[in-house]
Amino acid sequence: MDRVEMGRPDGQEPRPFVLSVRAIVRDEQGRVLLLRRSTTNRTNTGVWEFPGGKIDPGERLDEALVREVKEECGLDVVPTRAVGAVQTEHAGLHVVHLIMETQLAGGEVSLSKEHDGHMWIDSGHVLRQQMLSEFEIFWRRFYGSDSV
Image (cartoon, rainbow, N blue to C red; front, side, top):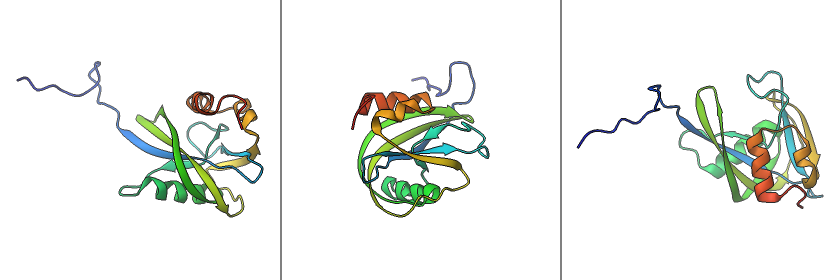
């Protein structure tokens, strides 16, 4: 049997896949937290996103989500369920973002250098913000444009 070479049809090296976790964080009024990527980022400057980031080797998904939210915005969260996934492409990578709902457990918003703004926004207004199209598609599919 011939060996099948895994790779892209154009002969280029395949891009690696990395896993990221993203949090849907709501406050007491049910508003959703969005963070704006700062000008210190190489990609997607000024774009609004859900808190989160890449998973460290050997780290559980829930641990990574709690750590990333704390690092990025100072909040303590408890993951409650996975609600979707999207894939983005950048810097020669496929990034798969697992999106999880969380329960806010404490803390005050304190942004890392990765972000220069935050907002608590009504669910029905999330799509009015400039986000990556993949996150917009996720929001429409899972929550609808004017959900609670």
